[in-house]
Image 1 (spheres, rainbow, N blue to C red):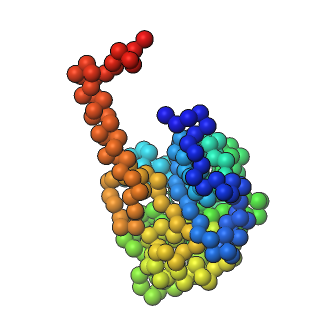
Image 2 (image 1 turned 90 degrees about the vertical axis):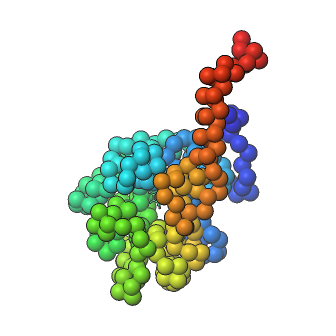
Length: 279
Ligand code: KIV
């Protein structure tokens, strides 16, 4: 167990709260933005105290927490639950709440209502949604009421059934041009940042250079203004597949499996608890 105040803060130099404005300044200073996902209190606290700038309560919760095949099934109520506990754990990072599939696509009134719920009920500071030009009117409306919006282009997992694969996106000149148009349109609609997922590195770098808002890449090469990974992927906890853009910083799945196996063995062999572990 960590001590009551949590583990030491590795990046304690600057503990000022990260805001959409500070992310903008980081882009201007060419200071890379580090982002990760979180879905629960303990993980959010660890990620925050390690100095990560942005914490996304991703709809990837459907896959890495709930064990679903895709992100499409997670509900607004479930996202509010995760976003609420993450928000209550975070002191420094900017917290982004992912709007789940069909919570913002039906019409702009519903999108606005759900964005408002995400901010008011869970305490996150911004929302994320997927899509380009077709979603820009919605983005504008949410931003106009004062809720910061993060965009998400390239591989958009909520549309998996439309595309049928998780392969690299925007690989033809036409698709690359469409992606560039979508990125410009999102910026014009007022997003404070956007995620570019699984697109060619050169294209992502060129879009990052062209845009004034920060571009956070995942599987989009090193030329973006920041990087995001799904925490359960980079910790080696979610191992159903291993795309090459995921660098595993730990093998916690294997370590946990070993711990659980040794515990079960000890209990069955009456090796646990010992006298010292008893009263
Ligand atoms: O839901 C999520 O975790 C995401 C990241 C992959 C960016 O959208």
